[in-house]
Amino acid sequence: MTYSKFIKTIKFIFLAISIIMLVLIIINNRQNQIKVVGEKFSYTEKIDGSINQVLVKPIFMGLNKKEQPFKVTASKATRFKEESNTFYLENPVGEILIDNDKYFLSGNNGIYDKNIQELKINGDVKFNNNLDLRFSTTEVLFDFKDQVLFGEKAVSGYRNNSKIDSQGIKILNKENKIIFTGKTKLLLKNEN
Image 1 (tube, rainbow, N blue to C red):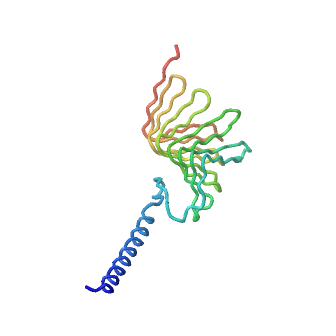
Image 2: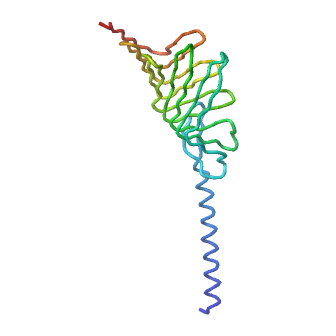
Image 3: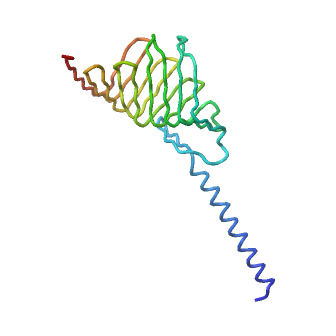
């Protein structure tokens, strides 16, 4: 084999390897995306150029229809180019002041839509006030504008010594109501 044939062979081998690497990079970038399936979502981070902004410890603030302040914070928020007002959150916390009482909503992952003022949280979701009200579930949607908390997953709630378990929950702040949906079990205990 002559020297020039050897060089031509190596040149074609390197060209083939670079084409294979390029194809693998394109395939890998398409697999790492946020998957939104109906009303459920799972959080995985995109690594390609569609990320518009990544915020560390962001704070989103606003006013609801009754001019009461609310705040959404997270350890990290990611915004993508195709969804400019939607943020995908890690460890989100929502806070709203209602009639001089603060309520908190937290979980593992979330999606906050700035335009419609909605926060959807999943994974170890906690909802509580400063005093004695506590609820836990796996997925919930909070509409800051209309002050409605809604969830269709199993929920457990505690207040004072009482406990309630239900298949779903809807809290309507305007009407000062908590509605439990599906099969519900209530255990009342005397404080003495």
